[in-house]
Image (cartoon, rainbow, N blue to C red; front, top):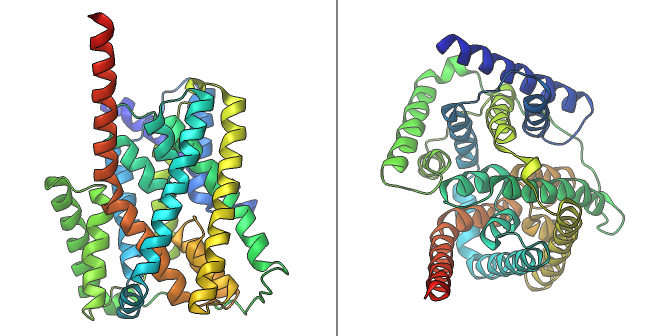
Length: 363
């Protein structure tokens, strides 16, 4: 049985690695996440061998991502969050409300369960929302993943066109490759962050924290970073590996054959994603007017995509990186901390309502 699982895991990894390589050669966005997810999804249906991807591999990937996100939280970012907190809260709530309304429309037109569509529509990051979907009972993971991927792909292709186009008046700066510090000189610090990140991940799980293997490392790394204990940068290869760990797991969890009303769902998902981008663009005009930010800074601060991609674009177009990072981080933390309990209450209320309707029908 163990040998069988090992062979199935090796086959899964080979498919994931091949997907990452192909997507990278094609210069597609986040290749090791989307590539591994795509090839594991396809391979698990083409080949007779049953693919296997244990949960702990995905959790290891989340710890790496959580550590990297925690490093972005500096004293300067904390000060920005404090000064701009009202506008961050206002714009984040508006974006979530807009997403919730779009989810309700998609749910009505496709007859798909609203909680699943809602989790697929909230712009909290692909891996984060997938993890949240797994933790909620009755959620269709395929729908959540499909909607999140559709939004992510739309944003990855549309936002650069807007940002680097003539409308924003952006100008590419020279790209400087960041070099990771020599790990041989930071062995004690590496060990400290390694132990604490893993420890806080399991502590978060024990106290039932939402997405503990992501939030635990974020909290401890950000806290140390703000206090002046700066963690070492991760090698690019390790970040690629974390994407592969998460992408392979997501690909195996997706069940596209169970997706109902495919054509209608795809059409509505694309319309919803494009509308969300326009919503962020409209809010960014208000942000620019009130705080006198540049157009690229305002838009990238509110764009509903991944923080890493938005920060990279901000660097390329000479936008204010601290502002972009602060707004993106606030939305991520708000969605990870505030949204889960609200969704739990909403789902519980909806479940109780359905039970009452069934009871009345049987009486």
